[in-house]
Length: 237
Image (cartoon, rainbow, N blue to C red):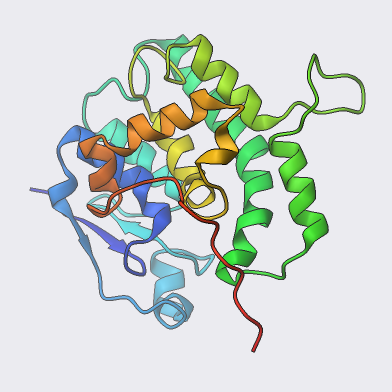
């Protein structure tokens, strides 16, 4: 039985997409973590030459060789065993990739600068946070006009409403897994359920996926829920 070794700090959020796929395909029990100290191991010559030249974690050790970048790891497990998570036909596969790219370019792009300062990753700027909030969910309605933008979370909400509560097809696909865990820090940190009042299908989707056994397993068996209060900014020393 093959073993898949992760080089990462404990409960790394970026591994959750791969863990979810593994949970659905029945191989999560074959995962193990190597001894790893963030800020030390990843800056060694051995780690960068053997596992990840960017010195970031996680990195994955497979029987065929190493992988870095979390989406590449998840795709590896998608291809390793027969499943329908990656779509039933060419069109569904393309739709899944479409929503992953949408998440990266229109959700994570704006959530990151908002969320990261709350973990001490970067300097807080109210101007930046306000710009991110407007890009994700503004009060503007109607079609996009020249020079304007459509609220990204409203686009997500419309898709979920139109497609019966999933991004692609009639059940969980890798699109749901990828987008859910890509925005995980956002909905567990800087917003509460009240934020989703005008995008209820996004909240319903989060709640539905959050209780699925595979998603809980991906989250290192920890319960998943929207934040009940906004995380405080770290105090300056």
